[in-house]
Image (cartoon, rainbow, N blue to C red):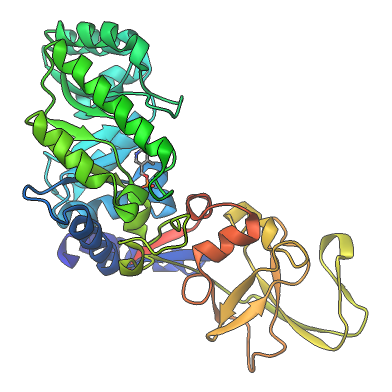
Length: 411
Ligand SMILES: *Cc1c(COP(=O)(O)O)cnc(C)c1O
């Protein structure tokens, strides 16, 4: 697998002078990424006779892991479907796959909306849009006819998110329009769960029921989808939906697919009942975010640190200065007195002192012997997880990961 990435390593070596100037960087473990993929596939396929297709979600720049980088690893590992945010990201990922000579037949599902201006790129880049309105179908049809090329689309059903998707009341009209189109082919039918991390949720059951009804309407209009997909990471982890999707798909003579993002990157929301999910313990974080110490100073009793002078030393302290702040995605909520965050230096916790600034953060290294300028610092990784960052900020790991702005290296 490394071979196809040599171009990138070389590029990094050639740009070594520039990399030396980089203030914070993220190392991505391709081995862990592939292990996480295998774990998702193993759990999603439990008790299945036919393999469930995996769509690897690389939207939002690969949840902050560099979409081009992770897409290439995943495709090399056998993934046939990737989920991207929009046509712009689709084109970027398509180009990255093209450069590596990775399978040109890799399918890219455009997950977040469709506008008229996107349709030419959909065809030129070989993307597969998610559609849910008559207008979507009409605009794709126009572009497809002009290019004399049939376009496969996936129809999204709103079963309770009220975000994307057609609701049951509007479905018949959309399905009829799709069924009657010469140029637009309904390849997949999908929906998205709002509460997949809640065990045996009544909300999830209601969504599944609406999805069943939707599939009946779609079939009654003469559409025969090849793929049916509903679950994401938490659905695989929680478990009760995957078997249902497989059965539902099989009854239609279709394949089942799972759309997984967070798990690939080594994270999973806890199941709300506190019981461990089937997937959680098998995942390993893929990203290690690092920086270097750029300054060391001593402060004494009463000296204050940072904006607002929110921290005053109670004794002699040794502080290390880091060239990273909230502009890089190191959240202001990690400040002492707010989230009380920390970083790892030499395998030990160095607590944040005072407020995180835009591009600078100060940490306490009084109890870590011998810290010097140039020492490596782990901002997120071993000893300081995305879940901990999320806790400081009152948010979820998704939000932390896709907010990281760093240079990326494959390890
Ligand atoms: C982001 C997204 C996913 C992936 O969700 P994870 O929880 O990261 O696995 C799946 N489906 C849709 C519609 C999404 O927007």
